[in-house]
Amino acid sequence: MSRETLPFPHSSIPPLKPYLPPSSLSSSPSSSHSKPHLTLTYATSLDAALSLAPGVRTTLSGPYSKSMTHYLRTRHDAILVGCTTAIVDNPALNSRLDTITSLDQQPRPIILDPKGRWEFTEDSQVIRLAAEFKGKGPWVITTRGKEGKERGELLGRVGGKYLFLEVGENGRFKWGDVLGLLEEEGVKSVMVEGGGEVINSLLVEPENKLVDSVIVTIAPAWLGQGGVVVSPVRTEGQEQLRLKDVSWQPHGEDVVLCGRIFTQLS
Ligand SMILES: NC(=O)C1=CN([C@@H]2O[C@H](COP(=O)(O)OP(=O)(O)OC[C@H]3O[C@@H](n4cnc5c(N)ncnc54)[C@H](OP(=O)(O)O)[C@@H]3O)[C@@H](O)[C@H]2O)C=CC1
Ligand SMILES: Nc1nc(O)c(N)c(N[C@@H]2O[C@H](COP(=O)(O)O)[C@@H](O)[C@H]2O)n1
Image 1 (cartoon, rainbow, N blue to C red):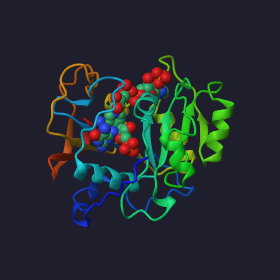
Image 2: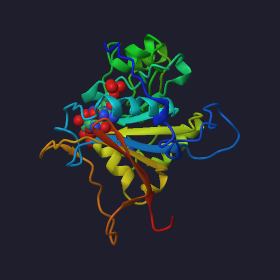
Image 3: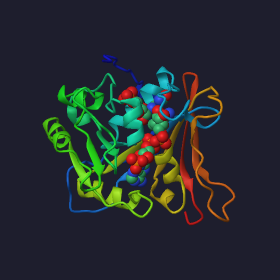
Image 4: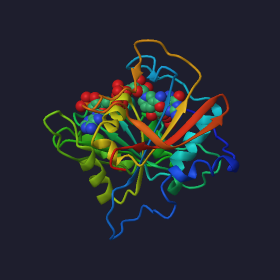
């Protein structure tokens, strides 16, 4: 298991701040209802690939941008991935920043798994880390009947749980429903990390209106054809989907691009 601790210089925080959820958003349930702040964040190659192929975990971020991602993880209540990423990457989904002193600073891992495909065990990284109090127990969003009894007990032992939503005709949860469910659970901010399907589905209209900010790490590498790419379906009549309020920050050999989705109405 990784015992890494990652340093992140204080001086790198101010340029990221405008794109982060306000630090006054606490995760305790409150009477004021509003959609959780959604930050879309991922690492990409120069040819828009997240990984070499579906089913292949691929390291793109260098050490500096990786630390930045782990800082972002501490600044959100939750971190969300699709079940293929959970299956393929066996991710930790915690923050290994060197300033972490308590479990409260860790994000809640959330996995979208409508069919119960993620066959996690106590050896799955995210479960093991939760058992060791190095991360929070994951919440698995699934459809009723697809949860496993023993897996539900395992989740319960590490402080996680199943949450239930209905899928639409396309077999997918509506993003508005996902955020509504998280809001009910007291989540004020969520960092969506991937993978390809999850990111692409949030970049199309009208779902992209739910995205508050985008933080992309661009690595100086091409992965070539056959990778999992970020390339959302083009909306009819739309020439391009652009970011506004853009800033670029070098982090080692990578560059981190921050912005907000530009929509006609905004
Ligand atoms: N470079 C980076 O920053 C990152 C890279 N990755 C890489 O991405 C790849 C995986 O991406 P990809 O194959 O596209 O898979 P995803 O991780 O996006 O997971 C897709 C699956 O998640 C479920 N899902 C997604 N959206 C919804 C929804 N709205 N409602 C219900 N279920 C949903 C579906 O499960 P089902 O089919 O069971 O219905 C779907 O098949 C891996 O290779 C991983 O390494 C991942 C994260 C970040
Ligand atoms: N920021 C970033 N850079 C990369 O190069 C990546 N491959 C990813 N992947 C995402 O991070 C998860 C792995 O996290 P752990 O280190 O295991 O905590 C992986 O599942 C993707 O969501 N991200």
